[in-house]
Image (cartoon, rainbow, N blue to C red):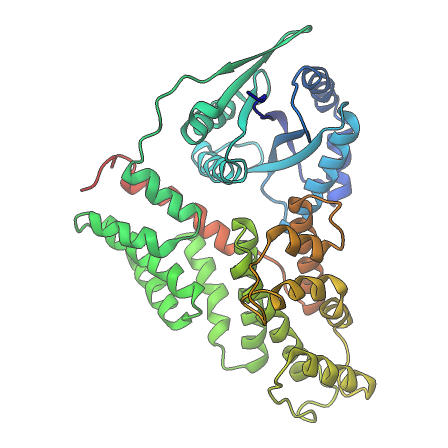
Length: 439
């Protein structure tokens, strides 16, 4: 029998603190003797972790939650490059963050994020063993990762013990996990399948908790269908039942501009909302849904520039075109004539080979003009411009490009849907944590 692949993962001790810009924060980590000692130990340990093919190390860091999303994405790349240079053996490193408040670790919030990340890794690596390197990280968080790893990977989860001279891998002896009502309900929420989670609520007796969760899930279903008035209706009902929860108040503030009577405000809000959905589909790995939304997002921004970047408002007549190429040609003409000006970053990004390459994958598929399926690797390699990268790094490029695009449009990339998802998982634990069977 061929040797089974083992993907080691480690929780680094310490916290990546926010200090000035990303470079300042990175300098604190790279010059921290504690981190350097951990990398020296890892380099020694990983020499004894034999495996065939590409070598992948998953590294969890605690992260100051004051970082913005674009800063976290930049930090991920820089930390991966730094660790790959420090660790011998040509290991490919993937960094994942557990955001925590500075000086305070909220275990309940960390439990939700650990569950989400381990679920994502379990889906990505359906046949590999997942090995936790023992002896690193905060003991409480180490235990959270271990327990969640056992719950999701079951008998594919191993503990990696080490001494100065050898490494020992201890398989986890466990019964197959029970597919409880609660686990399935949470899995649907993690995967953003809010309709399926909503239908599961029908198994429960009528309570205030069930009513609250039903309004929140229906809110998400309506939101992903751009039924914004219905979304706000269910959001208001949830606010009545829960009170002024910060994440719900914030969500209302972000959704109201979608119904603004001011055309420019409304159009920009719709673009931002489209990209929130795109961010979710990138995380899920749903390439079909991503491409459908990405095509519409590109079209929406092009029309936004035609409508709202006019040097003399109202001079350019904006009519719906039959193809995206006609929209681009019209926009180029108006830029040449100085009838449209500004937003050059957005304009050139939308014309870039990155965007064109990704959307060509759409055009050659069943959601475009052909009958082919959609291949995730083909999509992200087309966007990145080369196959000489990992899918995770290509996706990160998209997030960084989106951040620059938004900067040019005068808005900020946020994680409202991700934050709501975490809130739903926390609420599910509070409401239904003891339900291990159907009611």
